[in-house]
Amino acid sequence: MAARRIVIDPSIHFGQPILEGTRIPVWCVLELVQAGIPFSKIVAEYYPDLTEEDIQACVRYATELVKSEEIHIAS
Image (tube, rainbow, N blue to C red):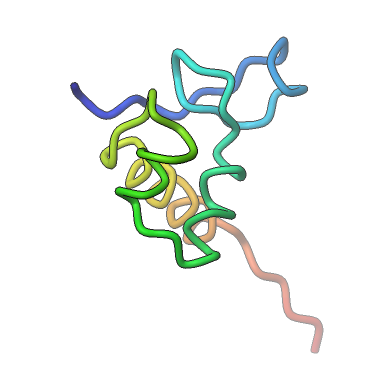
């Protein structure tokens, strides 16, 4: 199965980013990753409808979001 894209739908979770075709918010997956839970365990025990590629898509999404953030430093 191809990795799902991250989408924003105002009618699901108030427009928070989710995995396409699900109601699973990206932040829920990222919290599990942050807790050190292996991708395989996230799929097996938490979100069996996802693939490890879906979890990687969440990490890529977060990475791109941080990379594109503008930082304003007051002098």
